[in-house]
Each structure stands twice: as C-alpha cells, then as structure tokens.
Length: 221
Image (spheres, rainbow, N blue to C red):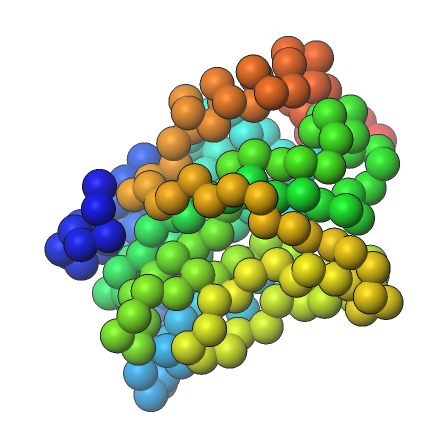
C-alpha cells in the first residue's frame, strides 16, 4: 500500500489490531474524554499504553490472539509489537487513523540474558505506531515503560507534539542505546507470518524455542 491510502482504512479492525470491542472503545473514550484535540488525546493514549502495560518479552507471541488489545490489557505485559498493536487499536477506537510501523534496530544495552532468544543486538521487526494527528503522520513508540526506564537508566520516550517519538540513541549516562538500521514500512495489522518467517531465518529454531519457553519459566519461578 502507498502512503496515500484514504484515512478511513486506518480506522478499521485488522489482524492483531482489535479496535471493535465495546471494552476497547470505552477505555479509549474514557482516557481521551476532555482532550482539547486529537494531539492531546493521542498523548493520553500513548502514556496509558507506555506505562500501564509493562514491557516484557516473557510473553506468548506466536498467535494473533497474543496481540489482541483485550488480551494484552489482561496480561499487563507485552513486547513492542503487542504494545504498539494495543495503542493502534485504542487510537482507531476514538477515530485517530493509525497503523503499525516496523524497523530493524540495534539495541546496545540489551540484557545479556536475552541474547539466547535474539542471537545478538540486532532486532528485526521492532514495532511502533504511526498515527495521523495534527494533520500529519507521526511515529510513536510506547515500548519501554516509565518504571523500566528508571530502573535501567534509560531515557524515557516522552510525548512531544509534532515530533516522532523514537527510542533514544543514548541512555541517561550517555551510553549508546538504540540505533535504527532499516525501515520496513507500515502494515494495517500485525504481519505475524512475515515476522515469524524472518525471525526463524535470522535467529534459528533454537532461539525461537528459547523465547517460547520464557513465559513458562517465569510462571514456574
């Protein structure tokens, strides 16, 4: 699809983007009520998803059900694609055209214990939201919550009107953090088959199985 698609297509449900349930609409409306404009509504939704859903890769990830808004809210945790899919759903529910953007990144502060599921610092299909607010498309990355950022000494992604909200290049101590390597464009919904095929090719079945085992290992601990 081109960037010139009609805005209406960015308001409808899509695979993994669950904006149609009454509970999703009511939550989005409650958070956005009283906003002066779509920018303020977007900020409130962004901060809700950023901070009330903790960032975690110790979650199920290989079914589209794992990305649905109600499931992510109930779980209270999610990794970047799940949190972006939730924000996208909430935004669409209140009439903000939204889609999912993808990029490959290098995370120079990736905890070593996660190398067994990533195979290294390069992460394919990092996800964020692209939404049409204030008359233009902007990126918004709700991945890392306030508590995690404070704990790790990372720079918090804060909402600034008229700017793309991307993961910072350095942490609070000035150490290199995130480097964007390759933009993969946007999708209307979660391209799960595409992501899984790429991850399997790039990191191999052993890493994928290690990721699948994390939720069970955490539950047993």
